[in-house]
Image (cartoon, rainbow, N blue to C red; front, side, top):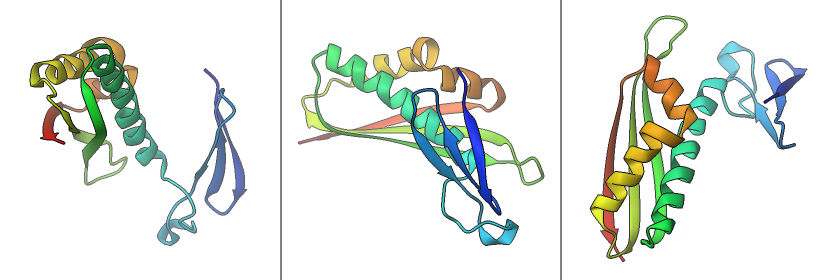
Length: 138
């Protein structure tokens, strides 16, 4: 995998992925940015959320679960001092659908955590990670 960032001035960069997609990175005004893009560490948390979300929804579809709406939230605690790394992570899965089996959700979460999601595998080495879920009918 190869990615790049190209400086746009001040603290703004355009990132380019192998797949050809661009993303804007920037900082807030306190550190010389203009708040026109995501922060790099936010992208790490977004990568975790997206990675596990894709795993879990794929597994639930294969299990024929009737998921109508699905959201993954990541809460990341950070160290107070620089480099302000993640110190703990919590991933919350929220599902809306019909007759969703909690055991299927738990299995999908576990498979993502232990087998499929490289972002989760990497980040869980440096920050304890907990998981939770909520299922809503309808």
